[in-house]
Image 1 (cartoon, rainbow, N blue to C red):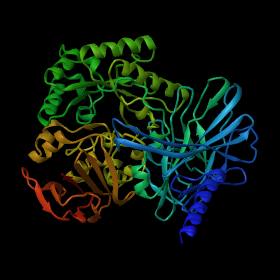
Image 2: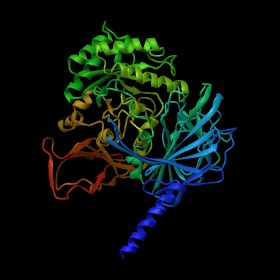
Image 3: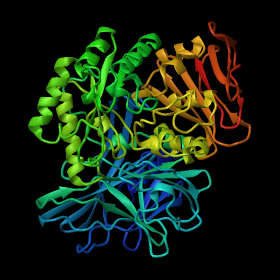
Image 4: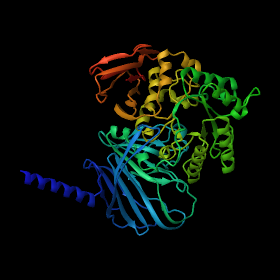
Length: 621
């Protein structure tokens, strides 16, 4: 028996070595890669989930792929902000030569695959990338029609033949009128219960970000404009496919796993937190010193660390200046952030201040002034897309801001692609169709609840998302989500700067338990778990900060819905629980304004019934 066991173990070891040497495989063995005629296929638990029939670059002929294992990656790293504080970076890396001038580097993780190209012998502009993903008709997908601000819906479809909708109607179309250009990330369900999120990561100075173009059943990876002439070597960003169960996708840190480690020597000054924000309720409020004071005072009452002073602060009325407003905030113990126009996107007719950051010497002067007067961070808005010029500009802004201890929030900008690891002073990015759109279009009112349930499965997986959640009153157009739905968004949506956009009197009219919730709300998490839900219908997530779990769920439908809440992963026999839920769309149902509900044994709820477009939050200690 002992001899047979030894032989069996030896055989298993030989099988593992053989697999490692001959076929790309993930550390847990669930993901494998096989060669196809001119590309590769990715298999999950021995079933194909992704076909990449075309690889390489135009004008460079590929040879047959022969995989060579390079090394096993096994390194944990810490994130100052995000869905997880300690990230496990574990992968098997392989290299295959496509040509004497071109090789493919492939990393297989337990939750997905990432690859990039390494070119040599360049002498001029980059050739055109040929990478294409095949998504057959009939496959469920949630895709964003591309726009330079990445502000749009992720409707579910089983076809790539979709006509542009709403504000997207002027985008790139086929002769038949179908939308052709799509933004990252794209969510696909290639098999029932198996999901795949396509995106990219680790954009560097000499690179443009990419999008996807429809070509029949193919989605072609298409980098934006890059005017640099290259000599010698260059590598592409990482092409990323997060693959597995919905839990795998929600928990994944693959975008930051393949991104450059932190480049800042000192990060002690970087503090995430909740922000009071003026724009949503008062479009031009940041040029009014008295309105700014209201939001500073609200931050004091709710115990928020930050206030954001938005556009037009350089046109302050009544003889006041931005320095007066910044001084008032600092005197009250609130850290002020201020807004800038990037001046590369929307310029004519756009709000000010403009052209203060474009030149290196002007940017240095402006950020030094911010640091001197006590500004804690900057919100920079209205970029113009994914071109190499804009990507380099963003990196310049992040590095200069870090030099002067300024936090950064990019708005009207591309989606996160890993900079949050490399430059942890980047605490949030818009790149989302968020609550700001209640200011702009009536269509958001009816669409918001369903849209809100797609974002945790799509946009927010790849990085921080400044949706500006939780508004109880109405802006230009009303919302029809419940108060508990709105409160739940502050937990469901990961953003290290979480902006509260409603009027001070709206927040201060809430029960004391709700006001206390804002002052205690973490904006960065030690652990994140998927509990239940499906894009466009509902979502329940659990996030842990220290020894406290925040569990949030929302109903994206127009009918009452019971949400599954299996919290068996929360260990311990005694819990203190506070509940914020729907009594009806305009009232709160709370478990005590002062006291926590004490549970013994395994008495955490397994199901919670929500109102139409409703929601809930559980705070569990």
